[in-house]
Length: 130
Image (tube, rainbow, N blue to C red; front, side, top):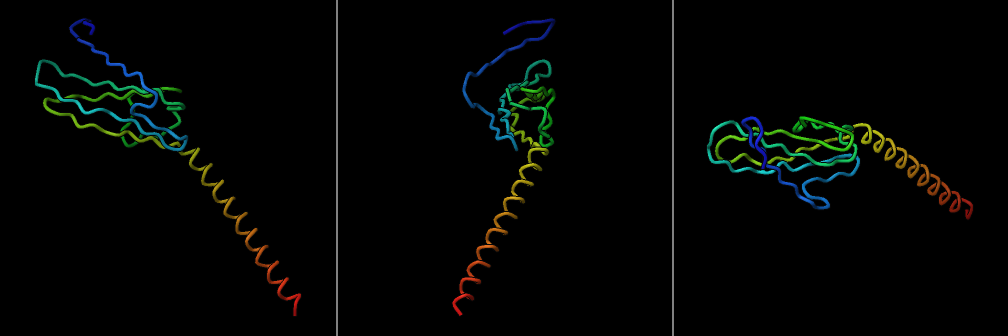
């Protein structure tokens, strides 16, 4: 806990492999914790930050991040008296999603061509017996 110019700052670091954040290159989600606060002086702010690979390439429109970097995202939440509900911030990497959609389309087209060729070969084999 630190005291600076009328402010009190308490840091709670959690050292865990995948605590509160998941990412797969197309989507990412980060948990913003629930906070219980008994009314006091001032207006407390909860700052939640995660190390997220390529964090700035995600569109965090569900709950925008206050700060984004290439490997981190930070959210600020004003804490009111009582309970501040936890949230999930979801980000979408639109470029990676479009690339994945193109690959899926081409894989489907190739599968369709292969299926058509196989069906044509079976028909020709049956026709050759006539």
